[in-house]
Image 1 (cartoon, rainbow, N blue to C red):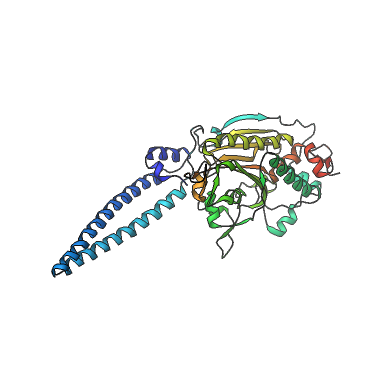
Image 2 (cartoon, one colour; image 1 turned 135 degrees about the vertical axis):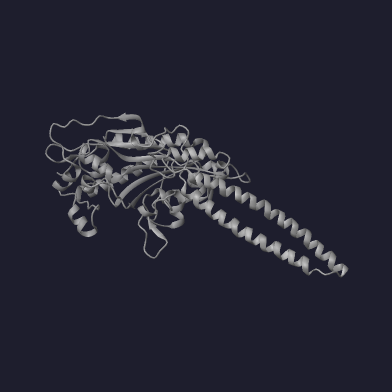
Amino acid sequence: MIDIKKWREDITGLRSAMESRGLDSSPADRIVELDKRRRDILVQVEDLRSKRNTVSKKIGELMKKGEPVDEIKAETKKIGEDIKEFDAELSGIEDELNIIALSIPNVPMEDVPHGLSEDDNVIIKTVGEPKKFTFTPKPHWEIGTDLDILDNERAVKLSGARFNMFKGDLAKLQRSLISYMIDTHIKNGFQEVFAPVIVNAETALGTGQLPKFAGDMYKIEGEDQFLISTNEITLVNYHSNETILAESLPARYTGYALCFRKEAGAAGRDTRGLIRVHQFEKVEMVSFCKPEDSDSELNALTEYAGFLLESLGLPYRVSLMCTGDMSGFSAAKSFDLEMWLPSYEKYVEVSSCSNCTDFQARRASIKYKETQGKKSEFVHTLNGSGLAIGRTMAGILENHQLEDGTVAVPEVLVPYMGKEVIGQ
């Protein structure tokens, strides 16, 4: 949530920030209008209360003298009614300000490039070279079907389009990736957490999924609960309504979860593979830190995600997202990590690492303080996919496929898989 008190002093900056993300900036003007009316009401209410106190004293004086007080009592009653009306209007203004504040995304950091599409993103680095095959490579959905390890037909029979069923080596690859990723994050100082995949509305509100992305989430009928669309939701809210001691920062958490999203996507190949699906698996990284440390912490999360891709032998690139292409509503700065996918003949996102500054902390009320007795401040929250499991599996199947139709297991996964080749 944006800090209205901060931005009412620089409404031009807020308006510019919204426009840089390709958004209508009129809510910023409405904030100015409402905030001015709010302050005017507070002045009028203060004057009325002062006047009521004066009149009340006068009633006592008149009564002592035995003089009539009906008229002045009526005046006091009218003042009370006026105050009540102003309080009701003030409550409405506060509600509308809160709704507007919840609808405005985070303000991009100063070093985020301005732009409205992926063409304006800045490629920071490219690691590895796309493999040159001596045979015609197959897309991962064909590899999986030919090896009888991906059964989309039965998945569709059970659940409908954009669901997958893994069998044999592919199911084991999924488990192996989850274990390898979490083991790696633990070595980097993350604490493993396994959390629920069903959350209440307040929890989804805390990280910014609600109200903006309610249409992308699966709601449980008759309940104020949702299936998570990312395990960022649960890991960030782990400390909701809490104050963390500064000595515990950065506080890093990682976890695996099933996630659910009403993916729209394009027709064609996106409906056949593991790239755009309704149910997917993800290992998440989340960090809570002091504001002055959040930029370096973002770089660290990005490096951790990059290490995983490099260790799995997947060519990738890192892009600094421009203001208009940052997909995260809560992000103030984001790096996308995109792996090379031969069937797409392009780089495809497999991780996004974001600095959300104090945006989520304000919504979820997460603070820190240096020592007992010191004033608490909002932490900065960061998150990153480490990594998206289905997409990583697609990358492994395609980039490590062999001419005989089998797939070489990345060296780091051999101890987890117990074999060197998938399909043998």
